[in-house]
Image (cartoon, rainbow, N blue to C red; front, side, top):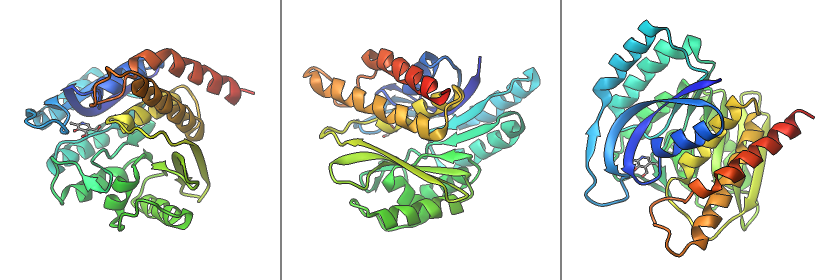
Length: 283
Ligand code: PXL
């Protein structure tokens, strides 16, 4: 069985980061080890959240794992708590990069044109250094702009997105996947590009609702898809279809909380999407 490690926070309640990555990646048949980088009572969209930074645990965990001879098929990072913690993540990459064929970075730090409340203006620069070491990065439009120093355009034209993808690749990663974008009105999707300039895009109808944590869900499914032998393009298609199903299911439930999507009931859908994608790849 493939084994990955994800490094991101635990928001005890909130359906994001590790509490999304663990169930989703496990359901996709991949062992998911965790390095919790911080423990928060909720994600940072609640007021009054508590936060214990666990940066000082990253190096000792890595040291113990090295002594035990563990290796990972992928390293997947999400929300990181501070610029200093980004530095510790780079050290972790250094320790495990030889034995980890894939580094996937979701630079979870911003949305809708704004940095998350917990970050200062210096944070995107530190996250750009993490992205520089990645094989694949998956920022949304806001994050891509902050990483590359580009003015945010909420309704980007294709040329703007192509330029943005090139700037993301200039950071040093092998492939960049821009999420939450589309070239057609009424759609939303992804646009990916690699260092050779080869690109793909995939879009679905844009749903009127928007929920927290969908980026984490998207990234987790992409990592799970890649570990199941799918290409990045097919993994992104599965992830987009699954996120869309989760948003629809949440919107259909008047009792649903505002803070995250009800992905749990859609796990069977995820598995059938994965199965179909694997069948399609093998023909
Ligand atoms: O969904 C990204 C995320 C992860 N972790 C924490 C967050 C957020 C977004 O706000 O606050 C703690």
